[in-house]
Image (cartoon, rainbow, N blue to C red; front, side, top):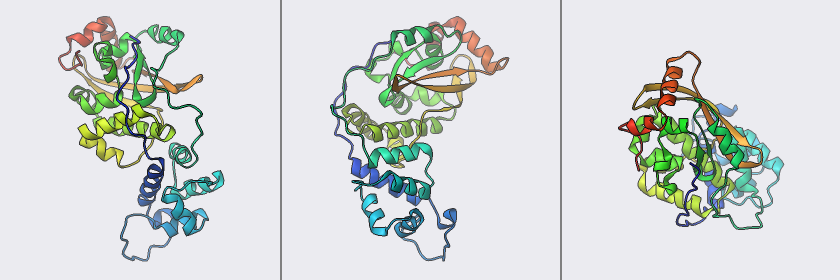
Length: 302
């Protein structure tokens, strides 16, 4: 179950300066003067949100300096200035990190690797031992790297999906069965785009990521709309509601564990509240195993 995705067509690198410019502009546009304690005299505003001069005032920098930064010129900007701008824009921790990645990129000595991502054998063995707990490892670009039989029973048997399509973003936006699976599909879609944006900020020169974004932008209007928001988010924890084709409604809590020795990979686990109907449904799926996937009429097939 650990076959790696094959190589994909390369895409153009993302323009880091354009990404920085649009990110700052969209963060500024979502704030109103009253949100940050500034008076609003009711003057007509040609654009939504704070003006550049208002943001510069809050951050304690000159208007000219902030304007250059918002135009994508982050050269020589200090961490202290970025911290001030992040506070003025009320950025989340993930947004602050994204801003730093865009404005002060790390210098990579080597070109981005196109080799398949590898998962340690011991980790593969570990998730296979999880009894009744759906678990998988996701890597760069939302690629699904390894999974256990419970994940296959809940989400579909990914071994029957072509390797290059074992990607959460592709499945969420391009496969109708996943739109049916996730009760709050809109939230799942928004999360996926936010994760990809975060990845793009760290690795704008990744040709496979650029190719993925390009493909989804062409094939999905919803992806294009969400990509244009420039929202970013880190994988975390929460609750997902699913509509499984065999057992019906499932309410599962999920946890994300970033690997210490490879921070580009995360293990995701799901569990149900003990004694709940969802817990009973998971036990039923566990008894069926892979047959649970093959018996469903709406689960992915090869």
